Image: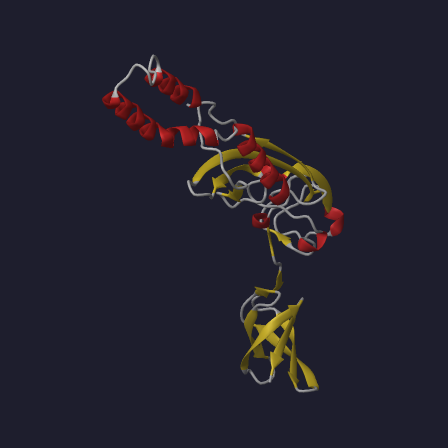
Length: 255
């Protein structure tokens, strides 16, 4: 674009000298120069380097989408070489157009916030490798996970679209919703809190009031997992009370 503007300027002024023109012609020259001034000023500002835009997006992705010390790689998409953006007089600003910290494909915004602002979106591929928990052996639906059932495997989490676990205490004691194959990455949808009390089961009811606590037998009128509130019938009085499941076959009642 700079060359185009410069070419127009040269053509306009070709063959014109102050000794060979009259005042009307001189007015035309002045008017032409006035019209060209904004264009020449824009040309002087220059064109923003496409590599500077891609570098800004890369720095953002490496700093915001990869954890410290994490093994990973960021690949920034190509920009159309015909793109001409005015050179920014301020440092470029970057932001994530799509919220996605797990890696994979994403879009990063690069913005110029000076007097003549512009924004462009750059595609990026973020490959981040993390050790996640997998199933160490084939398991059946309803089995509770033990630490011995788990294995660690380093994977590109950008390829995992359904979540993953990095801490054993996030999954140990949980119950499988469905069968799992050996080597399969554990996801939140695969596990659930185990049912600690079944409907009709005889449970221990711990009733407390202040510092006093008594225990009695009760019959669970519904099932539930840790922390669930269920109804329990006192075996002796037949009174129905509500309590919180605090363990296998144990329900706590506040009096």
